[in-house]
Image (cartoon, rainbow, N blue to C red; front, side, top):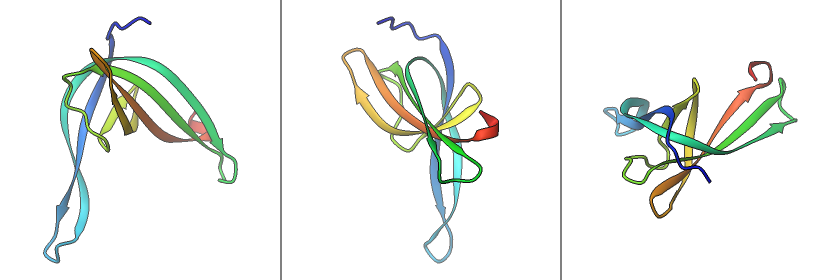
Length: 107
C-alpha cells in the first residue's frame, strides 16, 4: 500500500456552547489544522426510503499518527464535510473512518 500523504484536508473541532439554562443551544466550529492524507477506501450506499434519494458516503483515510483528530470532528475533504466516526491507530499512521450524507442530485 502506498502511504504518501498528498491530499489536503481541513479539520474542524465541533464544540457546544451552553446558555443560561445550562443547555446546549448551538454547535460552534473552530478550525484546528490543515493536514495531508491519503484515501484508502470509499463506499457508497443509498437510503432508498428517503425522497429524494440520499446516499451515504463512507471514506477511510490515513493521516499522520501525531495528528490531533478525534471522533466527532468534522473534516472537509474535496469540498464535502465528513464526520469522523472511528479512529484506528496503526504503527506509523492513523486510519479514520468518516461518513456524510449526500442528496441524489448533488452526487
